[in-house]
Length: 237
Image 1 (cartoon, rainbow, N blue to C red):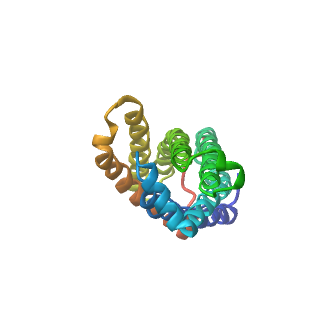
Image 2: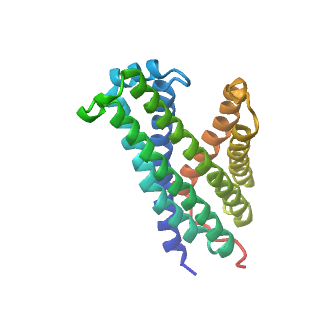
Image 3: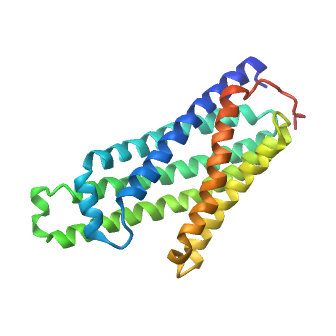
């Protein structure tokens, strides 16, 4: 078992990573992805991205940083919560790593879209409309791949919430909110799969996912950074 001082260091690592992830993900998703990509409109999406290429590239870099930072966060959370329940902590870490792998794969399609918008010499065999359609398809593939990854991320959050409640290191409310946040990710992925008219409910589902997610992950990250690992009161299993 790690001593209290060592666990505190892992809490700081996880907290600092979580705060960075929180800022980067909000920027990349809501400012860049939601701000530039217009669902079903390849021409408008192309105009938006070509007119704000720097912003699009910054969003890509932000997603790449999320991909990289998620690995040490998964590791630090595993070590931090191992005294509570090692098996659950390991399972939680694995689900987060699975999510991270899907994020990395999804980024390939983001790169592909950028390439299609570049007007490289070898792409001149395609018309502009064809290139725009292919680019939007690549961005849709990014969304779909990331969406599957978010299913694993949701399960990770549910388990992390259980560990928080079991640990008794903080108010149980934080653990329950983290669990609710994870459940909303699972619901959203299921809705994409089951509802042919998902677009009709997209805004409602976005709110359902975003509100508990911002509250839970923001609070969780700050708690990890400020207090994570300070109080080791859980019963070892």
